[in-house]
Image 1 (cartoon, rainbow, N blue to C red):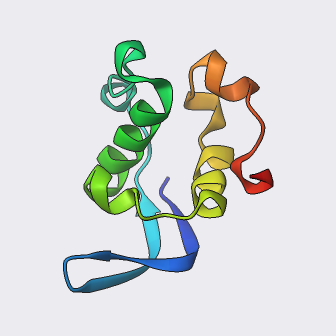
Image 2 (tube, rainbow, N blue to C red):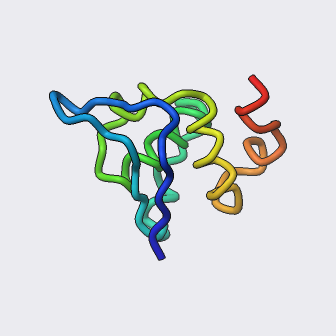
Length: 91
C-alpha cells in the first residue's frame, strides 16, 4: 500500500515543484539501503528515495518536519538505533 505525505514546504526536482511525495510499499530490497558505515540517516534518505523514485539530493530539500512525517510512518522498517530517537518535528 502506498503512502503520501503533503509537504509543509515544496521541494524541487529540476524545474518541477513537488508539493507531496508518494512512497510505494517497502520491500526487502529497500531495506538494503541502510548501511551502518554511511550513517543511518543517510540510509533512511536513500530508503525514501528508493520508495519515491526521487533522488536523495531532492529529498534533502525536505524540512525536518516533513522528514519526521515519513520517519513516523516507516518507523517499523528503521534500524533499532533510529527508532529510539525522538521525532524530527521537535527539532
